[in-house]
Length: 178
Image (cartoon, rainbow, N blue to C red; front, side, top):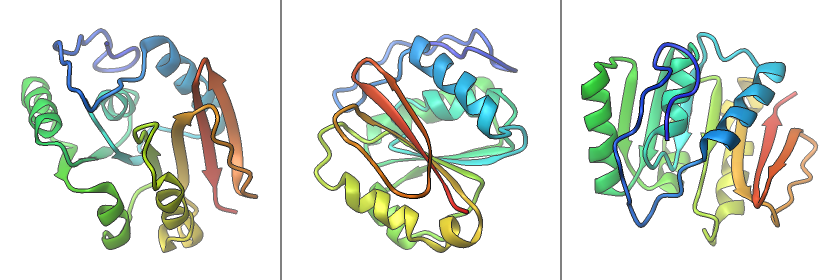
């Protein structure tokens, strides 16, 4: 696992074998960001990374020029791992939040330009989280962009979908408010 592009290009993540993480592979991550570059401007974007795990995706956003990243995860080992990387790379614009994602989405005043979520594929309430985000003031009024990584068998047919990509059993659906 490494950073593919930008200011942290080539950074190799230290070995981490958390039982609650499923890091996005370099090939899938590169394809995703190449696709996103055609739809959105990441430069100077404020990004929220839900179910952040190792921080792999959030750090890729920062490396590609995002202004800031808020990484949200509730597993203490994941939080410690991300904090160690933040310290190692001396990144000031990376906020790491320990919280249950559903509670965070329900209680937080969502801010930013892009929300990225990579929940566990077997998460039972994934549709509840998606609906909370799509019904939030952030999405409806602030013209937010929401990117969801999910297992390929899930299909989202909301009228706000602007992106559908599949790589093996991994799919990405992008939502954009009008």
